[in-house]
Image (cartoon, rainbow, N blue to C red):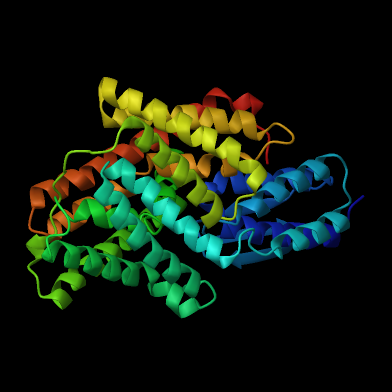
Length: 402
C-alpha cells in the first residue's frame, strides 16, 4: 500500500505541472490527479482554478499558484506514457522520479530551430489570412523578428512579460513603414495579425468558453478576462506605433486584396504552419504526422462547413471533428496524447485573430468594422466551446485520462 507521503511526493509535482499547462481545462487536470490517486488506493480532493490549485491527501493540503501556458509538447507525450505505466502498477516513488526527469527535459529543438519555427508559424497562418505573395514576404520578415524576440526573452522574466506589447509595436511599425513607402497593397491589419498570432490567446479564449459552458465560472471568467487584456495590450502596441511614426490612427485599416496564391499554396501554408507548431512548441518529430493530419482535417472540415453555412457553423463542425478525432486517437497506446494532437488544430479554429483585427480596426477609426470583428470573435468562441462539448460528450465513454 502506497503511503500518503509517497503519494504526495508524486501528486504534488504532478498537480504543479498540470496547473502550469492547464489551458487544456481544469476538469481534465482534476480527473488526472484523482485517477492517479485511485490507482494507488487513495481518494484525494483537488480543485483547479485558472492559475491556482489545491490538493488534499489525508490531513495534508498543498496549494499551488502558477501561470498557465502551453507546455513543451514532448513532455506531454512522455507524461502520457508515464500515466499508462502508473495504470500498469508502476510504484509511486519510481513514478515521482520519472516525472521529475520529464519536467527537467530541455526543449526538443534548439533556439535557431525555434526561430525558424516562428517564421513557419507566421507565414503558414498568414497565407490563410491573405493568400498573396506579399503576405508571404511580409510574414517571413515579421515572423523572423518575432522569433528573435521570443527566443531572446525565453530566459528573461521581465522581457517575457512585455513581449506582447513589444511584438505589436515592432510589427506594426515595420508594416506601416512598408505602407508609407507604397511597398504593400491593401490594409495593414491583415499583414500585422499573422506575426502576432503566437501571442493571441486563442487557447485561453476557447478554454474560457468551454469552462463557462461547463459551469466552471471562476476559471472560465478568469481566462476570459486575461484573454481580453492580452488582446488590448496587442492593440495598444499598434496604437503606440502610429504615435511614434507620426501617422494617423486611420492608417490602421482592414481591406482585403485579391488572392494570388492557388489552392496548392494555401494548403501548403497549413503544412508550413504545422511545422511551425512542432518547432515552436517542442513537439517530437514522431508526433508530427499525426498533428499535421489533424490540422489538415480540421481546416478542410471548417472550410467546407463555412462555405455551406457560414463561419460559426463551419467552426462548430470543425471543433466537433477535431475533438472527437483527438480524443479517440489520443487514448490509443503509442499515439500522441490528445493535447499534442489538437493544439495546432485549435489554432486553426481560434477566434482571437478576429478580436485583434476588430480592436485594431476600432483604433483605426472604423468602429463598425471593429464591433463586427469582436462580435465575430464571440460567436466563434461559442461555436468552439459548444463544438468541443458535443465532441467530448459523444465519445465520453471511450475517453481515458492521458
